[in-house]
Length: 279
Image 1 (spheres, rainbow, N blue to C red):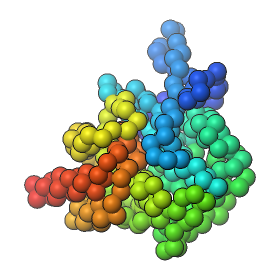
Image 2: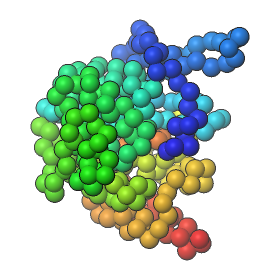
Image 3: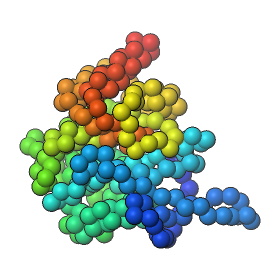
């Protein structure tokens, strides 16, 4: 989300410090130049489905006073799969979390929903740090952006699923939903986890995973940012995703969800359908 990224002022060279078992820390600077202090900013690690890990960094300066989380998801298989890289400024934090879970030298796949700084800003940093890694996306994203942007040639995803050893992932094109022509999500058929990208974006430092409604928080987030390309494709695409029957929704901003993910997606489709009628 460009509005959010412009508001961030993070130190890209902040050192990693001593960390607890489930977090990686760097330093966030704020305050005046004359009275500067440092507070730790951490990337928290939580397992939200079997071998599916949420890497979450809460940034209070974004969407203040509530703040905003930037979440990546690592699926740990024989060929580890990272969904979202985070911005370049977050690379020390996110890469530290990935290294803790699988080792950067073992990372095999890098994916994201669409081309945007908070989704793939750290792409080339990961490619440099992970010699076996390749970016994988739909043919459209590769053609219009990634063949030029990625430092190693990306892999255009065919219709067949991607077997990473222990998890089978399917790429699902979602053009313009919630935004961007090349947008596409991933569904882990093994665990029933939908890597949902910007869907259900909400504000605040939220729990890693909840079993309660996500739609109200998404409504508040939408009214704050107006980030969705509102059109008739939105409700239809959400209902298509619902029909896949996800039991975990891995959301990029805010809590992930465990339970009847299809019901949540249909409720979100109803919200956007009503917004279309009112527009």
